[in-house]
Length: 463
Picture 1 (cartoon, helix red, strand yellow):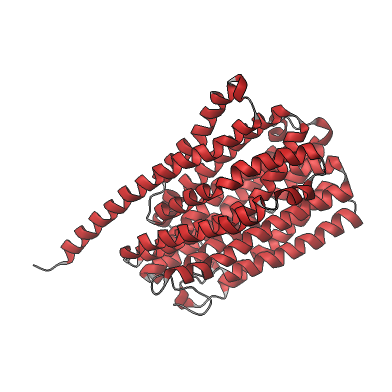
Picture 2 (tube, helix red, strand yellow):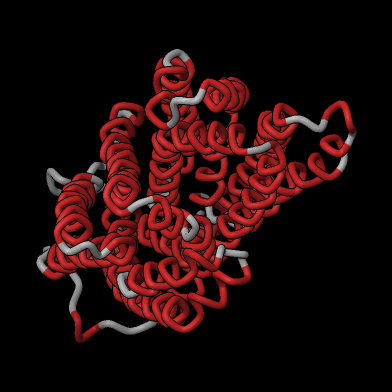
């Protein structure tokens, strides 16, 4: 089944292979952020502040609407990786065709929701009237590309499950270059403003979906990843397995988006300078988080493949390697770049001293302790790879989301603590508690897996 483009996750040294597997995922996330930043820069420079506000006002909403279905792609990744590890080609094929069918269905559901309810949802979010029409047009056009986005994401999850992270990176770069070129053409030459950015994004997503579909259609039969259009259907058993892992992951992402809206609302109380500094710092942190999240993705795939292969003894080592990688990424990007060069980096986004100082405060609290968030994500990846998705969802929601909301409703309301620093302090406090809970859950789930293994061994012993 394996070829040079696939990383063998079930044998040999783990750390070296995990690094090889992780780097393309990391670069994919960083390139995606750069391409998204290009959208903002182009529309802000050449279409004005209203167009920029129209595009920016949709970011939280888009994340909120897509997180649930992106979670399903995580479920597809875990299930496919398990069959890859077990070398069960028949069940892998059924998983591939179920996953790609789900991608198309979910894409059209999102497209319909965006087309039908764009303006109503934007009104509920109190979008100013002077940008409402422009924002709604952007959102409708953007959501026309949702079927393409879902096809790429699910295809990416399947290739990643088999150990291939390089081709999805290549397809993303191709689509990103197209996106930048079309941004410039539609916004500068055709004066299409926010709608032009939305159209460029939708068409570039079509490019990535085409490349991904072409890749799967031309896969070799023996890999189990070959896509045959006549076999596209939803197999109920595979759907149930994908939903079992994917729905909690998607729900967790959705609730995280909601909690971030509440945190943003608290920051909005402190005026434009703090809001601008917070936004700039959050953008810089996004690059660090995306890089650390690649370690979560690799831990998830490695754990699931080895579980499928029955190599349970490698699971602990995979977790340790994942933790090593994520701490190294934080040390290089979180401390070495974001914290050390915080002031000049913030200066790219804003020139105001007050805004830069506000951004520096956030970075000191968040980036300085970001390794805790990375550890939390890697622990979740290990648990999900072992097939436990509801447990890490509950722990993350109660610890990372619930605790922050309680913090904002209690400590933040005390007059002397009613400051941006108190809001930012909610991040490391919640991470410490949540990481501790995840470590306890890991040992409990790992013990249960050990008991199941012994029971299976006893059943297979003759006599």
